[in-house]
Image (tube, rainbow, N blue to C red; front, side, top):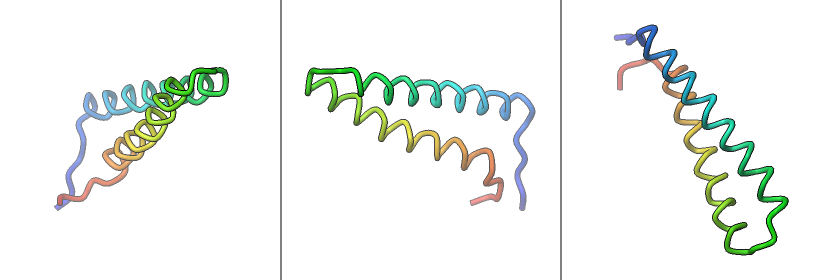
Length: 67
């Protein structure tokens, strides 16, 4: 059975995807400017986690088959 997202759900997912993409861009950019090693580690972890979140959000949008 195929499940479809409602219009508001699709819009919400796109907003979350846009926000997470912006956060990922900012963390990536700022990590190049940071001198503190602990902060670099935090930003690197944020980049990794952000990429994973973006992939999951993309799967929600593209994978509509019932599990």
